[in-house]
Every structure is written in C-alpha cells, then in structure tokens.
Image 1: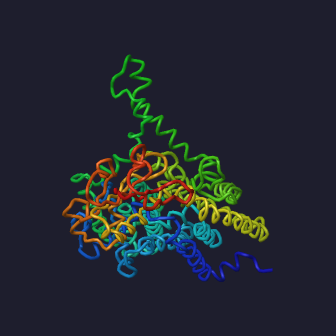
Image 2 (image 1 turned 30 degrees about the vertical axis):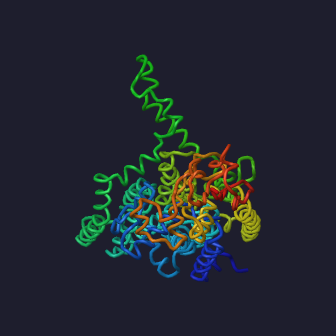
Image 3 (image 1 turned 90 degrees about the horizontal axis):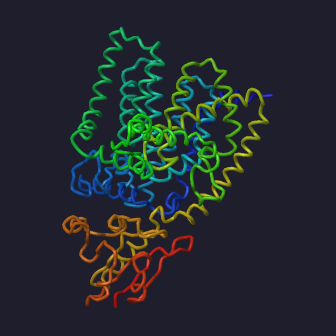
Length: 544
C-alpha cells in the first residue's frame, strides 16, 4: 500500500500548485459581493491609486506620497501602489481594488509551504500548512478586502524564507531580496513595524552557525544588504521624525487612548507614598496592557468567537476552525519532542511575540492586528499533521478532511448570510447606492446634501461620503479640490432644519438619526434604503 508521504513526495509540485488554485478560488470567488460593500478604507485606497495612475498625485495633490493622508489616518503606501496596475487593467471597480490583496493572500499560502519546509518540516507537514492557510477563514476574510495586514504578512514570510534560503546558498541577490521583503512588510502595515525587526534579529541569531562573518564574500553581501536597507529605511525615518505620518497613526490607535485606562491613571497626582509606589501610573499601564495581552491566549478566541461574524450570543468562528483543536494539541506534543532547536526557538518566539503589537493598541482581541501570529499556528499544525500521518495513518487524515468540510460549510453559511446581514453597516453599506443615486439625479435638483452620519446604533459613526462619490461617479476631481470637498451641486454634511426653508429644490440624503422629531415629517420622502437586517440605513427627502 502506498503511504501518504510517498504520494506527497512524488507529486509535491503538483500539490503546491493545487494549493495555489484552492487559495485563489477561496479569495476570488464573488469578491465583489463578499464583503458586502467597499469599506471607507478600500474606497480611499482605490481612489488614491486611481489618482496616482492618472495624475501621479493623491487626492490632496501630493506627488507620489510615501504616506497617504486620506482621512487623516496616513495610510501605508504599499497597497495603494499595488492597486495601480489592477485599476489600469480593470478600471476603478470593486474587483480591481480587492484583486491585489486577494492575489497576495493566495501566494502567501505557497510561500508558507516553502517557509515551513526551509525550517525542517516534512513535505507533508509543509504542504498541509499551505493547504490549511488556503482554507482558513481568518486569512480568507481579510484577503478578500484590501487589508494591509495581509500584504505585510506575505512580505514577512517571504523575507524570512529568503533569509533562511540565503544561509544555505550564500547568494547576494537572495539576501537583498530578504532585506527588501522585510522592509516592504514594515512599509505595508503598522504591526510589522514592531514585529519584523525582532524576527529578523532572531533569525540571524538562530542561523548564525551558517553565517561565516569573517569571509570577505559575506561582508560584501552584508554591504549590499545594508544599501538595500538604507534605501527603504531612510524615507521611513524621515516620515517618523520629521512628519506626523507615523506618530499620528500610532497615537490614534495607542492603548493609552482607552477610556478605561485613562480614567484609572493618576497622571502624576498621587495622594500618598504608598500610592506612588504600589499604584503608580506605570504599574497601572502595565497591568492594563498585560490583561489585553493575555486575552489573546483565550482558547475561545482561537476556536469559537475570534472573528465576530455574528452578534454576541450567536454561534461564531474563531481564528482557527474547531477541527484544528485536536490537531493543535498533537502539534504541540510533536514540537516539544522535536530535536529541531531552530524551529522550536522560532515557534516559541512567534508564540509569545505574535500578539504583542496588537496588545499595544486599542480594542480587545483584534483579529486583523493579530494576523502576524499565523506562522506560529502553521508551524504547530504542520507538526500535528505530520504526526497524524505517521502515527494514525491515512484514516486520521480522511477523518480530519471530512470534519474540515463540515466546518467549512458552516463558515460559508455564516460568511455569506449572517455576516452581511448583521454587520453590513460596519462596511459602510449604502454609501455606494447613495453616491450613484445622487450622481444620476443631480440634474433634477439645485443642491444635494449627503450626510456623513451612518449606522443603526446612534449618530456617532461618521463616514466619508465624498470618497464614494469620487469612486462611483464621473466627478471632476479638480472641483472637489477647489471647493474643499464639495462638488458643484453635492454637499457633504448632515441635513438640518434650515434646508427645508430654502427656496431652491434640494435632495437631502440622511441617516434616520438626521430626521428625528420635527424633521421626520418635513419634506417629501423619495426613497428609503435599508440594511440587509431590515434596519433603516438612509432616507432620501426632497425639501419641498
């Protein structure tokens, strides 16, 4: 009887290609429809890429910026520039905006196979790691939107794999590619700005026995690598120390902004010596951070409620599928028994440091900011699968795949039905319809007002409707720039009582929160747009 390992070894390249095809299918199928709408960030990425393509400038007339001011959050540049060729080929569409990250997310599954193999995992374990990532809802979901964290993870894994490859080949081009990949991961997303330098240093330490620093050849290669690093690092340091591009983003997401922590701090005003020693601000910040950090090790977050595709109290999905739970413990056991000290050291590092960047920011158990943690789980589960094939034989693999299929059907149902129904407003659902309706009917009105307030839970959520008009309408960007965010007829603000007193004919598009009390009865209702869950999203009123 042919053993599974023999089949994998014999058809390894074909199976790697199959993993790529599977990953592409999971990330490209109905990509325009799921997630339910382009988010504000996606629209900003798409329009700025379109503007770069056509003018070489962003929406604020900055020539080829290295940080995009956009909505004031200074977006990293990598995803925007990656979207330029896609928009050139497919136009300014949802598909074009989401395509680059979907492709990068798919390629990550392949790079993960080579990365795991370079660490000493068997071909079976390495191939399983790529397969596992290709069908992992955690990674699939964020690969289907234009999320920078997916891009950063790809370059982090590519840089790590190329570095290990270089320690064997000693080729300068591979080392330069590793440094460039690590640098692009830092440029791509905020979490990697902390994590990538740490993992690069660890890899150098773990594989130092393969690096002969005394050799002239190695010294020259490090010089080339240093030049590549300087090319990427110099503008990044300039942004860090001479602009607000890096500092403002860090400050806006910092753990120090959390109200629960801010209310507890003394801010230097201590009532007594005991409070200054045992209950000082440094201690309070540390305890608050430690609680957030340890929350990432909650098994419920890992296996049952990490992705928040459904409201609290409803069945949900964790970062990993439930079928991975026994395989995870098998992998931990196999990893402990392993004699591969380099692999064990890297896995241990990734286990403890993976959630560190996310824990330093606002929000509890943030699955997007924790994406950098994925390689740890891949290492463990790859070991678990390898152990399964050797000790339990083929029936264990078939059982796993059968339960995986059930898990995946469950994920597909939640993702295509429940997630759009309950959380469409968090993806700014409705602004596309608002923008297209306003542009198609602007000749009927003297002015159109579009609110920046949206959502069913109160008038506190503010959007960027001007970006949706820029994205979906044939609107002169020069008018937008000259008028400070308005068109000739389209204004972006909340409707108010005075609008109903004006003599000109106006279309007022607002959220239900904009038409409360006496405004609800004013004017003439033209159209009402609801969220998929039936809650009111936008009301279209004529002022007379």
